[in-house]
Image (cartoon, rainbow, N blue to C red; front, side):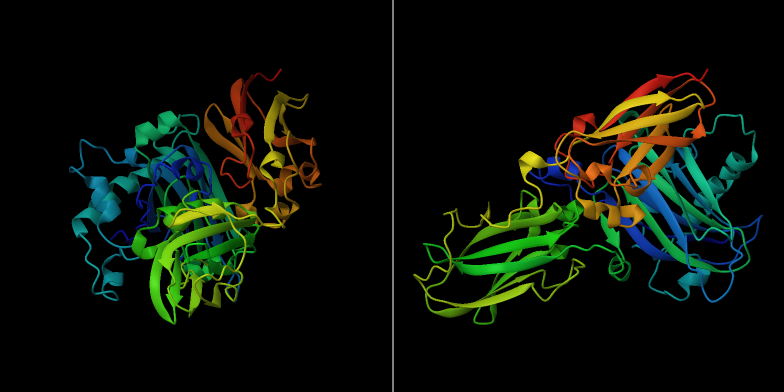
Length: 482
């Protein structure tokens, strides 16, 4: 019997508001980062995990698999594969087949019968499991067939991880035509061909609208967001006014503005210990200012008026929805009375968010933001592709080089529209030249170009840098080796 275990990733959250759409469109990607357990399988009968995701716009899909080393040597052999929903023949599948797979159960709960016995509340259609296995087992011919034969359109790459590889991954650039052809429906498949159980972590970074990150994993991120309540006071109309600050090289992930209200990061206002006002992130920061890296401040003027002396408390994220590097600064209380203005400020409408005038200022001013551009692509005498990246704006923050590889800005290369290679910032600019205004670097791919091809390069496709002009981030050239 084919042993299969399905894991559902809920990647469709509420669609972003029109005002927030442009910022989110170029902000942080959606992210799935969870632990997995691949039970023992065999070469002919691997144990599988399936992760459906839905893209909402073109961009880079990145899959990174890390295997736990455990207490002894690992003899694992696993494979990660990226396909799209065209693998399911619409003529042979029932209406709404993808939706049944995608929405039938909650995350990390769709299991085979043996696991269902551990989780009796889980209800999974065995018919769906059987149909999915039937279609997906046919993908084997992609790996065993004629290497010169063009792979099917639904196949977008795979990586095999042997015992000597504790971490590996693959990436794929999705353009507008492909997004239309696939309806944004993609599937990551993990397969275990070894007899031992393999545990690890799976990261899927993709252009969508969901944030499905295990808080315990997020706590291990080198750089985390840090929101704080900086000041609290009354305006001229005795309305409670709060200044919220973000003071980290990682802002609040842009996709968090898509969280449903019941799961949203919120600002809570209390009067004498009683909660009087709860404001979701989408309302107190509609411009998504706190999604930017570096120091950012935001002044929010509420419609809560104080008519007597009272202790007023402001708490940002009281539910712990956001994993932060420091939560001790999330609360502030002041004794306030009508007519008492704690600080000078701009007058705003009730319930409005305003930019605060802060002497420290943001990490980079709007007029001096970085502007990375792909300026040249050419072949050298050894048929290696050379890509020149030039900084036409202000300095790239040096802290970005200190992030983990998965979180750094990346240079993405494509060959004839298909993903070819990827290099993080620390690889294509190890000397940190781009931290200076006007500097340039040249990245040389270590794989030769064997025939005529259109080679494309995109710098920072996932929007890690607050780039001044993204229209020059991509370039393509037709190259022919001699």
